[in-house]
Image (tube, rainbow, N blue to C red; front, side, top):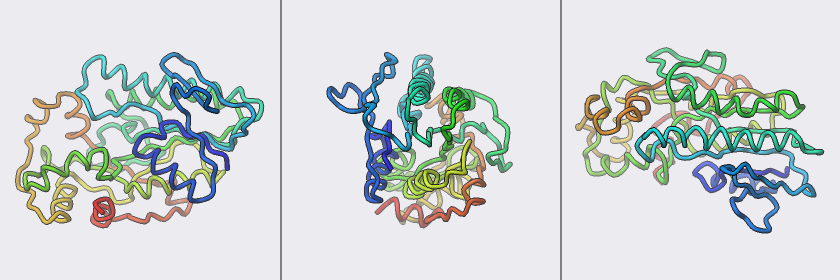
Amino acid sequence: MNILISGASGLVGKALTQHLQTQGHKVYTLKRNGSGAAFTWQPDQQKIYLDPSIHLDAVINLNGVNIGDKPWSAQRKIDIIKSRVDSTRLLANTVATLKSPPHTFINASAIGFYGDTGTSAVNETSSAGSGYLTDVVTQWEQAAEVLADTPIRTVFIRSGVILSKDAGALQKMLLPFKLGLGGRVGSGQQFMSWIALQDEVRAIEFLLNNAHISGPVNLTSPNAVNNSEFTSTLAKCLNRPAIFPMPGFMVKLLFGEMGDLLLLGGANVKPNVLLENGFEFKYPELDKAFKAALK
């Protein structure tokens, strides 16, 4: 397949590009300010160029600023939404008007759609939650609504916490845990729905190859755990103790709303669509996923 990826420089984008190339696919990347490139865009200016001489079989949109790398100022919260909504709308609207459109459009999304569910399990048929993260994801997915009136199959990949030592939550946790200073966050009862980076990439490939699947798909391990188990398992894999909990009030003091939603809230998310369609996780258990991520 000829596949166009936006956000190819990010954690998932890099791994996915490499994996798809090893599987024999031709991967193009949507470049910013790429003079002379076949596929370029400036989403903040709503400018895009897709080379009409190259037929694309699929488009994968992974664009969006990192949600957890900076404090959530009022402007940052706007940027988080705009970087997702504006780029998705631009790319979807452009793809919808192509004379020879791709058969598949896969758009990044997140389990933030479900909000804080406590201990209750949710799946792709569950209703939206409430709060800022739910608003972000809802607007993000709605930005591709133009494709509903086309033959283009559209899939929204609602990803959980992606495990990698190179980026994301695990990378931030490694240093304090290696120093023996890690521990549960808040009560430790909040669920963390996670997925190994390798399974994230394999799941996206699976969705590319299964043309009957469309709509929202949860990309999470079938075995979500609470924060206490997540942190104790990480400590065990690193041969370190996990005896320094971070109280909830300290999380709110240090991180504000971002800490309240990302660290103290959680959701027990089940990947029903993947499982019902025969996808097999390589790392369904947390300890093995950690060991793979830490290699």
